Length: 506
Image (tube, rainbow, N blue to C red; front, side):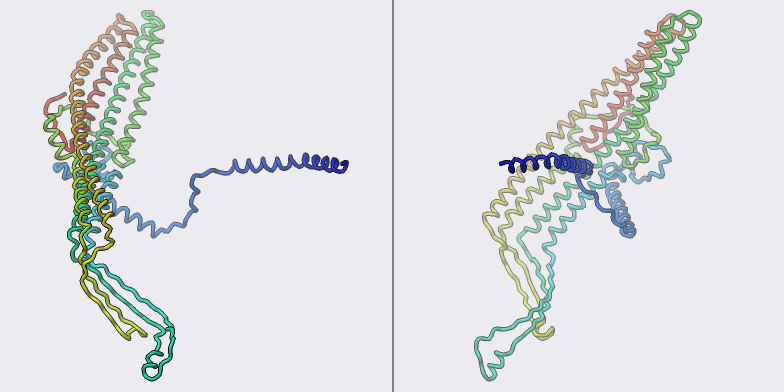
């Protein structure tokens, strides 16, 4: 018993000294794990750059961009035949108009390039569908070594023939198969592919119109940001003039110190607002460059201002234009037509295929020992599964019903969007008359308050209120004018066509 107790005591002492060591090791392992850099995906090892491959890739990308740009230019000029889209950024010389920005976006915005390339994918599928009528060629060569199993002995000439053995066979073969007629299955698939391609073209046109809308919004916002900056600069000048006037009155004892303090406070607030306006201007410039697709455009000077002409619009005519020109509606119509053709294709899957075939072989124990050929015409069903074909027809019919409903939904959405854009345009037009009158009144009040303060009849609070009212009236008027221009751009986007300006000034 004593021996067992002693042994237990010794083990306890050893464990007490050993535990800190193991604890230190565990702590070091945890620290090492913490220091290990966590990465979602391990970075690839740097590869040696093949300069020739890179040059070829850049040349291919440049060629693709040029082809897509040409295609986009053609689509744009089809929509706006009086506007030539061919323009280069090097021709701008630091000044751009709204039309210049739109032209540049047509050939530089990557969204348009992506949409054009996507339509080319669908275009290639038309040829893939018609390829069923092109011959399918095959070629091959086989080699085999055979050792025949002989189970009986023979004598004489017959025995020599039986004992003869071809050890090796060389068989080169070429073959061809050609579909002659499949009762309209290939044509239905090709027509369906064509409708999908036409739908993708309308999707590309919709992308162009969205880009044009985004460019207009960015351009108008930049114009407004410049106006806003000018308004705040004028406000700073007015408060600086008030501060000088208040300081002069204070030094001659005509005004209290509080007028000087109030003028300094008002000037400080005006400068803060001016700094914010400058930041907004810089951000608006970057947004315009991004919408165009040319980052270097952020420092250009704008030629155009906000449009001050009223638009001549009629809701009934707008709906008719939208139904004939809205790309999303036309795209939905093409998808519906493609789904209808898919039903026809699924039904024709029950029909057989009529095809011709032929092959030629030359070989045997040596490469030219013998030859053979075959040719013929066959009428056959391939993989005929009536249950599968029936369910594929049911699926095609259900898909067609879905696209019919999608088209109707898109038609209703077009009506709603046109109606909303029309109402917004009318509301912003009516708001302009009110804000224009308010601006006139605020300007008169600001002038009177400033004159009263100059002759010592007014106070700093009256001047501040009048100045702020005039500031807000200017921003409100130009904000309504901005909304009117943006709402007009939105109306053009939802109907898929430009709207005409009238000769009436806002």
